[in-house]
Length: 416
Length: 149
Image 1 (cartoon, rainbow over the protein chains, first blue to last red):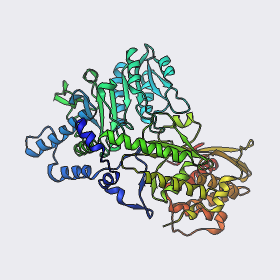
Image 2 (cartoon, each protein chain N blue to C red; image 1 turned 90 degrees about the vertical axis):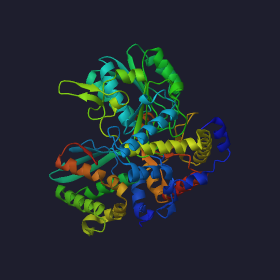
Image 3 (cartoon, one colour; image 1 turned 180 degrees about the horizontal axis):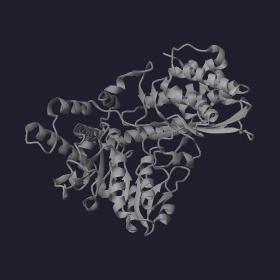
Image 4 (cartoon, chains in turn yellow, red; image 1 turned 180 degrees about the vertical axis):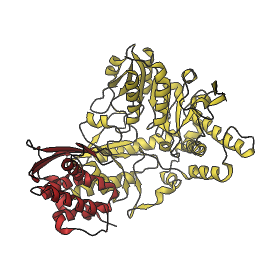
C-alpha cells in the first residue's frame, strides 16, 4: 500500500465496520456481549484469515516443494507467497531471511541452539532485560547452564522503562548476544530497540528482538532496527496458532548449523554425508504448517489494508482513554507507566487478587488475563504476585473500556 | 448458570479479609509448601501433630480470595482433629470440589459446604484445593513441596 492509499483510508477508519470482519466478536459470553481484552495472549481472526485456511484445505491441500503435480505447485506458491508478504511486512532484505517456525518461543530456541552453541562459550555473557517473557529467559538459562555462560539482566525503573545506562555498563567484550523484548507483554513498555541494537553492535554483539507484542501494534522495519534476529508469532498478529517467524540476517543464518534435522532441510543424504539445504529451508525441517503460513499471509494482507497509521492512532487513543479511566478508580493502580507503551493495561486492585478480578469480569463477558503473564521476574521487580491485564487490539472500542470500568465497579462491590 | 454470589459467599469473603490461623507455627512438627505455578499462588502450611492429633495449625502465603479462604477454613476444620479425621475431611472436600452434583457429606464438611459453588468454576478449582493438597502432603510426608499442576 502506498502512502497515498494509507492517507486515503485513514479518514475512514470505522471500528464497527472492522469488528464486522471478526465473527467471534459477535457472540455473547455469560449472557453479555463479549468484550475481548486478552489480545496480548492471542488475537482474534478476521473472516479473511479463516477463509484462507478453509480455502487452502478445501481446494489446494498438498505437500510443498517436492511435488510435480498441480496442487503441490499451488500449495508451494501459497506458502512461498506468504513468506514474501511477511518479508515485505517487516521490510527484510530477502525471502531467505524469513524462517517459518511454530511461534516466538521456537524462534528464540532456534537461535539459542543453533547460534548460541556455536558462538557462545564458557565465561561469555548473554544479556536480557528484567521484563522478558519466560520464553526469552529460559532458553538462555538452559544454554548458560550447558556451556557455562552468564545471563546478565538489565534492570528497569518503577515505570517499567529499561535503564539504558545500566545496559551500557553490562556491555563488554564478553557480551556474545543481547536478547531483548521489543514490547513488554506484562507492562506494555515499548523499548528503544534501534538504540539497544546500536549499542550492542558497538561492542560487537548481535541482537535478537522478541517482537511478539510489537508486530500487532506498530510497523517494524528490519533495515531500520538493524537487529540480527527478530522473532514473532502469527497468532498474536490476527493469524492462526502454530505459525511463527524468525527473521535472521543472511550472514548469521548462513553460518549457523541447522536446528531440526529431517526432510526439507537437506539437499542430499547418504549414510556418509548429508548436505544441508539453502536458506531458509535449512531451518525448516519437516512438513511445515502450510495452512498456517497462508493464514498468516492473509492476516498480513488484512493489517496492511487497514494500515498502521490508522491502527496505531486508534490504539493510542484507546490506551489513553483506558489509562485515564483506570487511574481515576480509587484502589486501582496501573503497573507499567512508561511514556511509550503499546496495547497493555496491567493493573492491580487494593485488597483484591487479580484472579478474583478475572472471574468477576468474566461473569460480565469481559475477557482479560490474570496472573504473572509468564513474566515472573517482572512481578518480582514490582513485588506483586500477579496483575490483571487488559490488552488491546485495533477492534477494541471505548465501549469495551467502559465495560471494563463497569466490571471493576462490580469487583469493588463484591469485595466491599 | 451459577451466579457470582454462589462463588463469593459472605463467609468466603470474610475468611479472605480475616484469615484464621494466618501465622507461622514455630513449634510445627510438619511443614509443607504448595504452589500453583499457573497463577503464582503460594502457601506454607505448618502442622503440630501430637500423638496423632493436629494440635495446632498455621499458614502463610499469597493467593486469591478463594485459595486464602479455603486455606483459612481448612485450618479451622482440622484443628484439634485426629490425622485420620483430617484425611476424611480432605476426601469429603475434594469430592465436593471436583465432582459437581455429587452427594455431599454434610456432617464431615460443616461450614466447608459453603465453598461448594466453586465446583461450577473449573478455572478456580486449583485455587480451592491448593491448601488441601499441601495439608495432605504434610500429613503423609509425600514431599515437602506440592504443585497443583
